Image 1 (cartoon, rainbow, N blue to C red):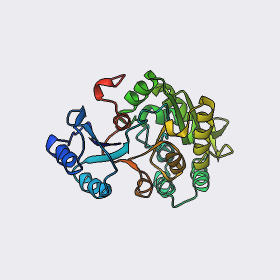
Image 2: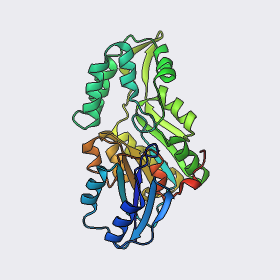
Image 3: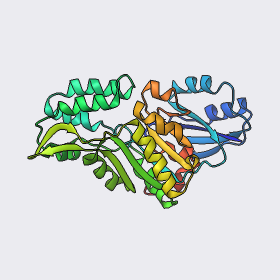
Image 4: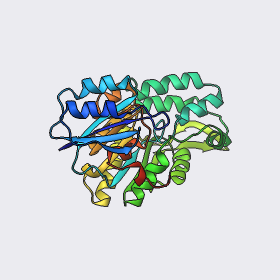
Amino acid sequence: MFTCILLTNPAAPALNLTTADALRSAWGGGDLKWLALGEATEFTVETVPSNQWDVWEGLQTQGIDLIVVPTEGRRKKMLLADMDSTMIQQECIDELADVAGVGDRVKEITAKAMNGELDFEGALTERVGLLKGLPQSVIQKVIDERITFMPGGKALLATMKRDGAYCALVSGGFTAFTGYVADTLGFDENRANTLLIENGELVGKPGLPILGRAAKVQALEDISERLGIPHSDVIAVGDGANDLGMLKLAGAGVALHAKPSVAAECEIRINHGDLSALLYVQGYAKSEFAGV
């Protein structure tokens, strides 16, 4: 059996009974189950519909995401999450660069790297080089004044941890930011790159080795082995090309507001929902969310 989930942006619900029931009927699905009225509903089908992606495309214009997942084993025992533009709404290196006066150049490199057009390690090294001489104090300034959390993140972490899941933050960004995000949201551990600092200033070089796509895959393998759980019990979420390895390896790989080239390679694509969509994908009703 498979479960079809329809969901929308909780801040601007666009899901109605007419749309949901029409799809359920067309696909010969079971009864509708509302996970959150106007926000998310689901129904079961016996096989994956052959026109899934055509229907997905049509629903996108209505502000609705469509996901089809195996019904069995939906609830996962581990969350592996990217940070920049996933758990938070910014790219930290872009914010540092903006303060340094080289924002446009760095943002251009970031966009190409996240879309898979540039080698991640080379792009990171080049961007960090443009930050040379920036006062260390700017890191805290960016955290205090520029970093905002992606909606739904606190409920996602609180609910999964309440039910015994392990949560890891793995970023191609920097420990100066992942430490703050992990502590605030309740991640069990975090892994990221380091910004080298001497005499209170950024050196302009990242610490080695650089954590990129391979390191995220390695984190999934290391942590799941340590916990004794299969990859099928992991839900991973990210938005960039360096996330694709872990998204494909995880039992549920979620492309959240992802670059088009990244989303095209993932079965679970969330373009309208927020991080609470990861709970709906796992079959949680909003009434079951923790920390809300």
